[in-house]
Amino acid sequence: MQQLQANAAGSWPYVPIGLFGGGYAAATSNVIDKINISTAANATDFGDLTIGRSNLAACASPTRGVFGGGDPVSGRVNVIDYVTIAATGNATDFGDLTLARAYLASCSSSTRGLFCAGANDIGTLQNVIDYITIATTGNAIDFGDYNTALWSLAACASPTRGVFAGGDDADVPTYSLAMRYVTIATTGNTTAFGSLTTRRSNLGGCSNATRGLFAGGDNATGLIQTIEYITIDTAGNSANFGNLSAARFYLSACASSTRGVFGGGRATGGTTVNIIEYVTFATTGNATDFGDLATPTESLAACSNAGGL
Image (cartoon, rainbow, N blue to C red; front, top):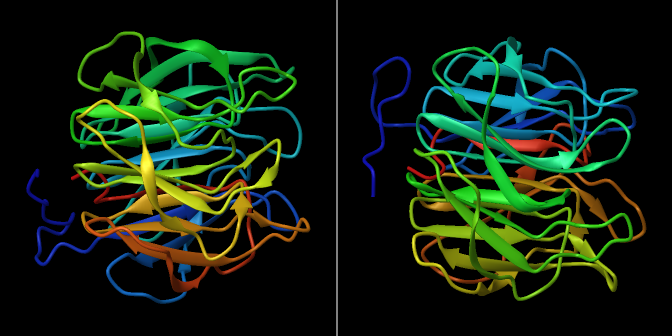
């Protein structure tokens, strides 16, 4: 496992910070909430995105959190903005994605972030993968392609490999089982990884350095409660990990080296929730209550300064 780095102030112990940004909470939100992943508690205010939007994606290095794409009040955007995780405050413009889109997925190593697939402003599904160097502001660059155009997928990563899972690959939902991966340090198209146990879209994904988790979502039979796991550097099918406290989709996820955390979403009956819950990567089992987001929010994005390290 890659050694955890000191925080931006150079101090120890390292504090694993998770951020939940944007989404829809009665209206399109620009709010960023903050948690200390090692300590169960309610989220606190961190600051605001440069523009309120839902259905965006997020990734992070040990020092910066980056949010890309999404739906504002109308249209879809190519906006990328960032925050310095150790210092609360509003986001700053980072650059632009190669094209405006929402319902995309993002993951990262400690240095490079990827943004994958999604749907453009007229709803055309995309297979493009962009990358950024998180420490250097600027526009995203083409990385390669997913094997098919799709949206509403999720992602996780080890220090070397990014894995994308689920999603819809047609206007009439087909709810993909597929998982595909890339090597983050190089550019190129995705390679087959394996299959999820359950077809799902609008799911949440997170990881530590070795194990990736995919939770919640929806498919043709309704909302999904289960959590699945993979060993990121060993291609193969996922296995059952446990359950969320209740079935929900449009949730987001972030992680420390020991905990995966799932926040927000929409539950059965169309209720938007503020639930935050967590699991321990090293053991399988059901999620445990962590606390609450400041406001019930769905279609948000999450990242942390420790996931994948």
